[in-house]
Image 1: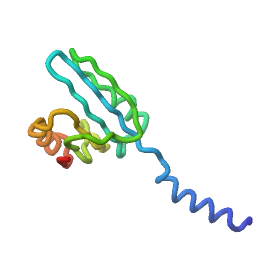
Image 2 (image 1 turned 30 degrees about the horizontal axis):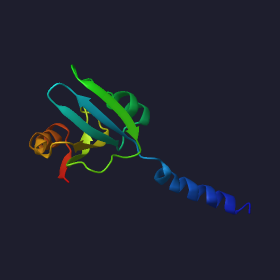
Image 3 (image 1 turned 180 degrees about the horizontal axis):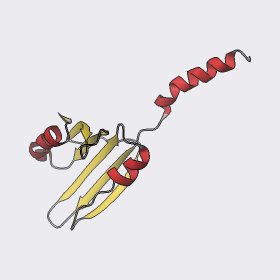
Amino acid sequence: MYRKLPLLACLTSLLWPSLVLAEACIIQAQSERMEIRLCQQNRSIPPNLFRTGFCKPQLAGQKTSVSFVEQCPAGAFGVCRNAQAGGMPYQQDIHYYGVASDARYLKPACEQQSKGVWMNL
């Protein structure tokens, strides 16, 4: 038994990264003329920074709400994969919900500003 314990500890440490829960936040914003719903799926942002910085929208004149979930829900019309925010080296996937025709604006922003890869769903 004593000899198996180190082997068990090594195997457990190899499996640990796959046991870490995914993290995402759903952001909803509403103004008089529009409604926005998106979900940011964390890829490499430190968890505390993701919750306190990346999932804190500051949209003037809009009512916003944020909820945290394990992963982004189905139903998005497009996803910006491996998006970088603010020139930082961290990555996230941004799922967009709502009006699919908005993809004509979101795709160039994804690819040029966020250095991500746009995927229509």
